[in-house]
Length: 446
Image (cartoon, rainbow, N blue to C red; front, side, top):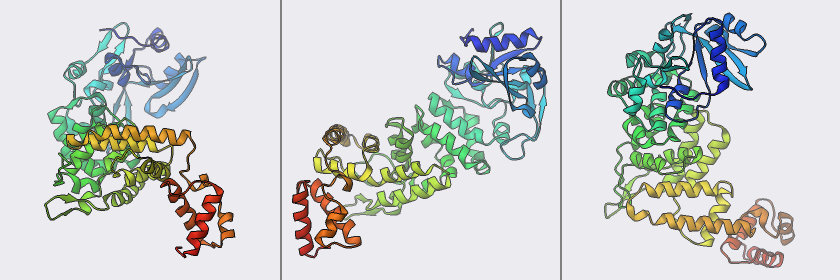
């Protein structure tokens, strides 16, 4: 089988061959090309040693990316192409990196050290695809399987556990039984891995095509990363609007939402506070008062531990805090939500609310149309520059001082005025607002 790869990649392969060395495109680029996808980048493996690679490409721009591990980056037609010597990895003592690397002249040595069969294929325009470990068969059967013994592969590099889950979600593949068993058995090894690397793989998993099956079948693995989800797994909601336990509902909401990182991360954690505030009412219905506030606070701690950027933490926390609002096609509701989350994040909140309701009983599906109507109203509010923030008010803090407000009273009255405007109780004009503020002050309500 031949696959199409760019001319500049072929040129690098042919140049190495012209000096008497073997060279192949390897790994993910071969997998993606077989799947009909455009690879993000191309890696080349060769029998040439690093110094020999550099000699082959005299006159080219060369970057010594990882020379001690055999990798030299060759710049070909403006693209960085990693060229790496065939190698055999030494022992792994930190669940991540080999202690040493031994160069080899055999392609099979290099392919046999790779993580999964679908990533262990090589391609050369003359030889075609080289597939010693059944990668094409596994791709046809839509499954993720380790090269060799799964326990050995995951023992070498525990991050491969998350990569397996990520590929299953991204490609909509199943995970082969022995590989799955090893993942469950060795999940605690993830604690030896940098939390940033784990978080990166988690986000790729969440934004994949099929995160639901992975999140539910490997909930115990996700719980190693985020222990706070443990109470959610199997937690019966005792609520007529819900058909899943808390964790399955969250996983379903993730899958049934737009593939935006902040939307899916918010939905993963949006109900994490529910087990902590669950109560049955007199009729036996589950109630979760204040779960959005508790969940928002928990999300901050979780995401800080995972070293997410501050802007992501702030946004996700805010979106979780307001996800619970019952959809209502009403200008007052929309204005208040816009004011609370901001114009930029309001569309994300709507998508979160859509995903949340798609993961509930079918009676909640009609809310999707209401949410779309709310989105249209928000667009109109923004287009008309309606008042949704204190900065939009026709009066300022200095104006409130002239009325007699002092210190913290100034911020309080501006908040009162904003609410009054958004509730259509007073027009956003200087005169009307000043009259309202004077009357409010005379009534000593602040």
